[in-house]
Length: 164
Image (cartoon, rainbow, N blue to C red; front, side, top):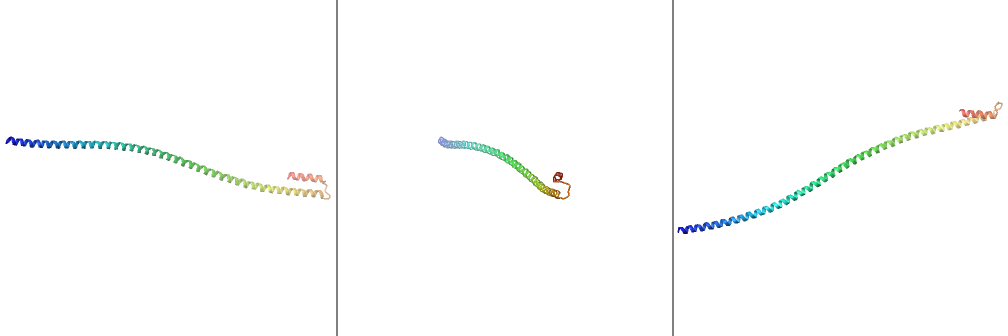
């Protein structure tokens, strides 16, 4: 009976060992499947990480291009502002120059008017002088008892005209 008991315990131990071995094989299989799944997830994550790095690089390049474009825009804007300021300055100078020219022209017109008035007065004075000479000439020609002849009176009138 001891042998039977020992055989029975051996059978139980063998059955337990077989069961344990089956559990170990089952756990190893599950662990291997988990490791395979983790490896696949790692591959997928590495691909996603590579895609994210590539996307980040593209975004950084676009950002750099935008910043460069913006700096160019700012420089163009500053140049445009400078050109506009220079144009405004030139326009102001031109307006001031035109105003000065208009003032000079107004002065010239006033002077021309003064000259015209003086010329008119001179013409009137000459006309008056000529009329006076003619009256004098007529008086000399018709005055009774004078020693002067008509030729002398005319010459005296010419002398008066040229001297006066």
